[in-house]
Length: 204
Image: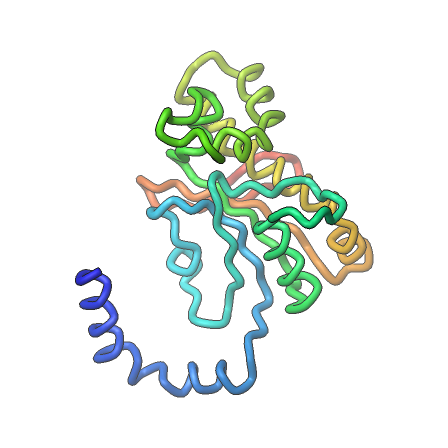
C-alpha cells in the first residue's frame, strides 16, 4: 500500500493541478465516453496508456483473456462483464466497442495448458468460454508459439462474435449506432494490430 500511496501523492503534486479543471468538469457533467474497451486484466496491458487516452475518454472492462461471454437470459446470477457491457451500451450509449487482445496472455495459455492448480475455483469455467477459439488454434498449428498467437487472435474474434449475441448490441450495429473493432497489442514491441474485415490482423 505504501507504494500506491506514494504514487497518489505524486499524482496530487504533479498531475492533479494540471487536470483539476477536467476532473471538476467530469464530476459536474458526468462521463460520456465514445468507446468501450474490453481488455485483459494483465498488468502489462493498460488500454488508457496504449491509446493515450485521458480521464473520461474510455469505458474499460477488464477480465481474464478479454473474453465476452455469450448473451444469457437474465437469471439473477452474477454477470459482471455482461453488466458492464449493458451499462456502456444502453446507458452511456458508446458508439464503438474495441476488444483488445494481447501477446503473452496467461488466460490463453491456460486454455492450452490448463488453469494453474492454485486457480481452480473460477478460472477453468471462465476460460471455457473460449473453447471454440482453442479448437481453431489447435487445428491450425502444431507449433506451440504460433498456436498461442493464433489462440490470442481467436479470443478477440470470439468475443466480437459473442457481442453480437446481445440483442441490444446487435440492434445498434444494424441501425448504425454502434461499431465493433478488434485489436491486439504486442507487449514486447509495443505494436498494435487491428483486425481487418478479412479476418487478418495488421499493424495499425
